[in-house]
Image 1 (cartoon, rainbow, N blue to C red):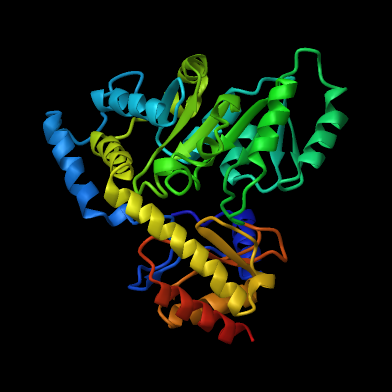
Image 2 (cartoon, one colour):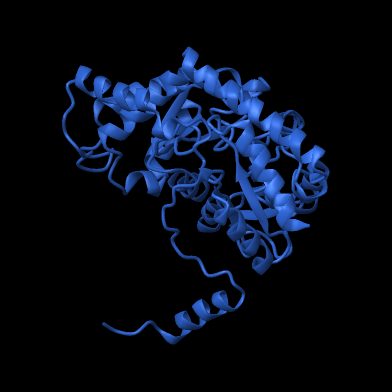
Length: 386
């Protein structure tokens, strides 16, 4: 087998020198403070059982989608799920993709056109950046959650754009690394008044915020002002896949021009059935109890870091994502290793995933974490830091 090209070997060596080389972790029987399974749906036995009952009720027993959705893979469960999503999220239509990454590269490479302008929050997810780079529109980042910097960026760039340039503003309702949120109401009002197209990625908000987990956009009642929402099913829903929520015309456009939708095999029926079962579970008493338990744990976590004097090193967040900034890859990996030795699965987020100097421990809270686990883990964190 040929050796790896020297240029690629050098890039790996450079990663290793900065202690930023990624490797796949070995599964460990530890207390989970790292996964995106915020509501415990990923291991929920009721959802597992309901999925099979749903498949049996529909008379579906095949394993794969058998092709892309535009050829043979558009099995009947897709329309059931997409109709349900449209009703649940109060939108005209929904279109399911294979993953959040597929949604973002498909949407952002296909929708903004040459001559258009895309303004995105500087901490936007890598998949959105990739999608924008694959497209032909001019793009510009603005300071994190800073609407005034967004306005200034638009003013600087709009004068050089053509008269028919469309302007897209892109943000997340809950940011994946900081766990914080923008002022979505102010953004929605600003975009509406100026006829800009607001796009909101709700990956970390669905299942956590809003009545029955509808997300932060619906909690704030601004869904009519948002051009498109991206929701994912691999986090609080505990499954896999994602969807774009928007107008019927937008969905028709994506069906025709989003390459990550057109040129890939569809999701198998079992996955679609699992998503449907998870959404159904959100609306019943057990699902609502999991949401309540998660919110109580978020409140308790924040109160505990205040009592322990750790507030100054944590990014303010009311979401399931809580980040403790510990500068330097070596230092943050060392603290993560000590917590791992204590039996807690907490992941160190290294540069270049986050900016140098902003390395952090990323704590993901869940409905199934106990207050005793949270309190003990934070006390250990303090002991390791000071």
